[in-house]
Length: 346
Image (cartoon, rainbow, N blue to C red; front, side):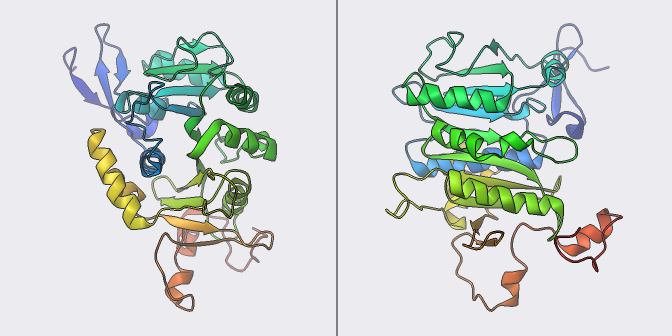
């Protein structure tokens, strides 16, 4: 048995946190400096990098109001909100979670302190300082749609500052996102809460072309583009996910506000911000395989191209690019996969 105060490795797949530290009682306490899942590292790197490139929303920047505001829809293992609060200490991280079992697991078994708040910043007196972000981490128990509606109203009334980032990571074990969390009303509230130039970052299950998970990715990317702004995507191999980041337009579309960042800029800036934050992994490496999502005028049309790279559209290489999982993956991992079934019928 390790001595008290020493660090012991635990299964990252079980908690999303790679280490536990023994406390005086001999209980395990999660190490908030570790992100055990690749998709969490990708989401965090995407948000931190794009906010840094914006200039005004850098998560390491402490502005007049104290720092940046970050909202997490879905608590999960608690790894990402705790990590951001620890590595970007100028931020205030608000988490909304509807499932009390998840909250109990995180607070009692992972040892993460999550002070309860009755409502979002600006809609509750529980937040000390209240319209000013600063170091902190708070949890609101309740429905995410109601939370986001309250948050949007508070921002509109000037009772709370807009957020630099909204993270969406709220699906069930089957990979389904609750319908009201992909609705136009919810996404409009997300857009109202996020500052111009800020990002809405989502984690989704991925799949092969024609599969239900892949169709969900395509539909959600189109919705993000319509309600928030241009979308960038990243493939995540462990587990098989895709990360989408929609950057809120600054001003009216068509006024030069459709600014998206190329791979080189994302990679270089990600590496810099990662070093400044003291990350143990290379944030630039996490965002280097970015794709720009282009939704055509025809419903259901969807195309990804390597961010900032100009490739011959006639090249067969172009057709193999993007975040979609290859057919070979389905053959190896999906017993029900049938390549003879028409696309869209699987």
